[in-house]
Image 1 (tube, rainbow, N blue to C red):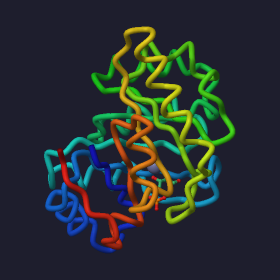
Image 2: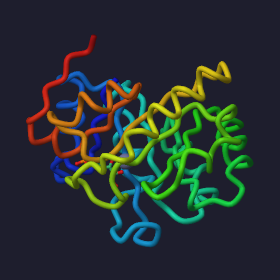
Image 3: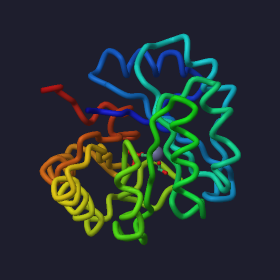
Length: 207
Ligand code: DX5
Ligand code: ZN
């Protein structure tokens, strides 16, 4: 599945961006929320998600690159998020937050930055619906994929099989026409794409 990230869209025309996603094979809309603390920049928040919600039936994966994500889950759920993905590095009681997101009736995702190994989230794998593997340091679109992060995708799919689990593996950062094959071969179920999707350099065919 392709999940275009709105971060690289024309932010003055998010309505047009949603239309582009729908017309070009997007299955999920990836919404990067940045707080200027966990990552340097501030992007957009609940009011933007709320405005986008009536425009499409596609699910929203809200990627929280924020400190204290436990303080934001309720309001993003109310704004229309379908998946709430937060960073393991930003949350001490990740297990509790996953349960809380489920109590809100939403899917829960956990994300890891390039320096965090898969083993750090091993105890959470049976609870989450999604693991988002960051293949760039979070904070900006248009960065180069860090090749050593790709093996985490296969590590996760192996663990999923060994433990008969069902979570999806998503990959985020630096995916373009030249790196797509590597991440798909490693077993990614969802591919996030910001700059390559919105600059038109990556064509996607849903198979
Ligand atoms: C980075 C964000 C990504 C980003 C991906 O911090 O989480 O979703 O927008 O953009 P590209 O595909 O350009 O690396
Ligand atoms: Zn993201």
